[in-house]
Every structure is written in structure tokens, then in C-alpha cells.
Image (cartoon, rainbow over all chains, first blue to last red; front, side):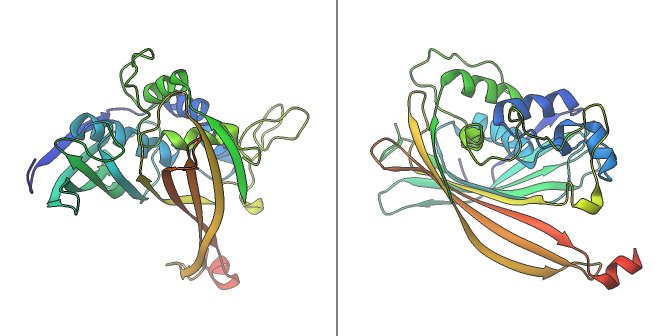
Length: 139
Length: 153
């Protein structure tokens, strides 16, 4: 992996309410703004909307396919816009830097952006990932 | 501050991966590790977690009658940021001790002239030997309109 390497993937072509419910079920976050259309509409929203953490999890699912599951040392994001049922989501990631830490471990610094079908950023963040042979506590 | 035990199970990891759009995982694989944001599902075990049903207690979602009131602030708190640092893999069979503490708070002016109140929550996930496994920082934001910005709306 080198500086400038890029990764792109469509996370979903049509986010379903059922996937939002599926995430609520496993995470335990049943906040009705995500799971109860009646509540969401009465609270002033056009419909239920996805947990930010669902978008973060879907983005991570794609990133770990690219970078390796156990290789992340940091992952952080800002949630920039709400994600709605029917949204198309795609992630773009780019290696900004490859460096070597004090232990000799190579690390990739990666920027991450997830956009909706209108091209608007819904999530923007970063990942740091170990490259090559693992060291320290990780296998 | 909240403190609880979070038993990590292969089946919950498999369900989490499905929910995130991944393919089915082999839950008998000894190398199975949790995905990067899996620890967020520790809320299932948090005794203070507000967003699940509890027997005999009122729930803010709808049933026979519709619920949801913007004047009561329903849906007003939003998740603004989430950050994780990883120190050890999270694997089935671990029992994580989770501690959550409030962090910094700050206020910004919104474009409409109201306030945006930000609040941090810092969470540590430690293994049975007390070693740090994951550190998390969440930032929430609550928009608070001023009287003037309400009139403009």
C-alpha cells in the first residue's frame, strides 16, 4: 500500500428501513427516531433515519475488507448529514501517508468519506491501519 | 458514570456483521474478531441505556397512540462524532468491563442564531486483566434555539 492509493465501494444502492431495524436489534439502540416511523414523523422528520453508527459500521465493513480486519489502530468520523431510507451510500478512501512508528511498524493514514446519492458527504473521517506483518498485542 | 460487564459472543458479532451489510461469518472460526464499531453494541448490557424497552416502564415510541413531539425535544439530540482507538482485538469469550464518563462540553453558535451544545462521552473497554482493549469518544450535539431564532422560524 502506498500514498495516493484509493478505494471506492458502493455500500448500498437503496438503504432499507429493515436494515436500520436490523442494526437497532443488534446494537440495542431502539431510539424511535430510527425504528418508529410514526414517532419520527410526529417529531418533525420526513421519516425514520439511520443511526450514524450504522453508516459508520457499513463504512468500516468495506474498509476492513480492504485494510484487513484486525489492522486498525484508530477510526474516527464526523456525521455530517442524516442518512435516510432509500439513500444510496458509497465510500471513498485514500491513503494520505505511510509512515513507520518507533517499533518499526508501518502505518497507513487514510481519509474516509461516505456520500449519499446526491454526492453529499454524510460521514467524513480517518483510519489508521497497520501494514504488513503485525506486531505487539495483535496477532 | 456508567460501569458494566459486556460479554462478547460470536453470535452477536455475526449479527452485527450482517446488520452492517457484510456476508455471514463462521462463528466457529477461532480467529473471529469483532468489527471496528462492534463495541457500540455493548449498550445492550448498559443498565442505564435509555433506548430499549423495560418491562412495566413507559416507552417514548408509539403504540395505540402516536408519539413524538418536537416541542419536548424528541429527536433533537444528534450524534455528531465518534472516535475509536484500538489496543487489542475484541474476540468471542472476552468479558469487557465498560466504563463511561462525561468529557468536555462546549457551545457554538448555529447559523440560525441559536446555540449548538456539544457534549463528549468517553468510554473505555478493558479485558479481564484490566488491559485497555478499545477507547471510544462520542460527541453529541443538541440544538437550542434562542427566542430570536425561534421568532425567525
